[in-house]
Image (cartoon, rainbow, N blue to C red; front, side, top):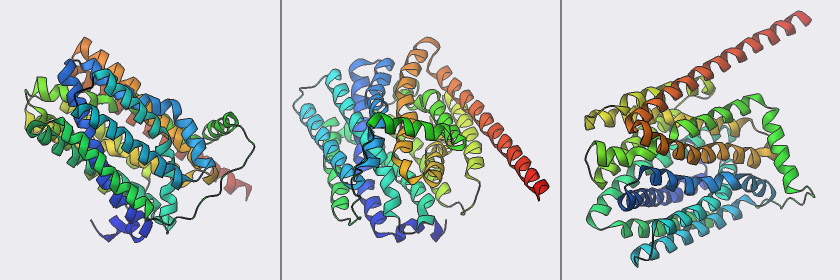
Length: 415
């Protein structure tokens, strides 16, 4: 690791954003861990675990297009500030209900759905705003990779802290910690002085702008393929995390701390993957890296699926998560660095739909399938699907290489 790994920190606004978001995300993962543990403890249902993920992510899928249009139409800075305040209010309500014991599984699901709607507007605004925070645009891939390292480091720290706190002090403390963590990101945003974006007074209707975004993706095969593959990964492979509480409680016969450690192992692998991506030299073929790491992801899940020795299972979880990181980071980087700036919000919203929209559907599928064939066989199948998607990536790269060779040959003949 060298100084190039952190070159995006040269930008003042990005440093502020990174610091505030880091604290906030630790609180977010603490709340996510507490929600999963509470729901499984109340219901002992694998399907309900899937349903909880569905409730938090599917609204993001439904409203992501509107979030993308809003990010392209209005000032992204103000939109991001608003979504953070609304997320904090959701955390306050959830904490109050848990503290007073006036909650049920249904209440948690409703509040998760509300947060999902907020995230539909938060993700396009936040991702689109990163490019405005980075002064040297050549640092953008590095900034996006550092973003992913931030997310995964928080996933490493948050669940581990949550598991220990739940065991010693109860789940209420986790929910309360998330409330205070939002203060960090809100303060960091208020300290920024990003030039305001003038409102788009275009007379176009929302549906027209949505259609333009879809047409742009359809007419740009390189971006369309990336989004399609991410959608397949999100539908069939990423929902393996839904089953982690089952591994912790039923397979490894552990406690909330066991759940937190496994989740943290996944976070450690993903963090290592993000740092690896941030350390890559400019100009490296990211599409090839994405294809290789998709295979690493699949192999990690295959070996993890039937491993009953807890320490070895953690190793395989780390390996799988290392490969998993590329799905999110490289896909985002390729889109951000190639998309037309006027389309950035809408294309990112389509990317978010593929990521957030397919996962909840996949979580329901995984929850149902695990009831039929078992948790281990379900995770094994997810690993095999990842390997298949890896092969599709390489085939697409080969076809692109052939097209490029033909184009160069024709250009040479014309000269």
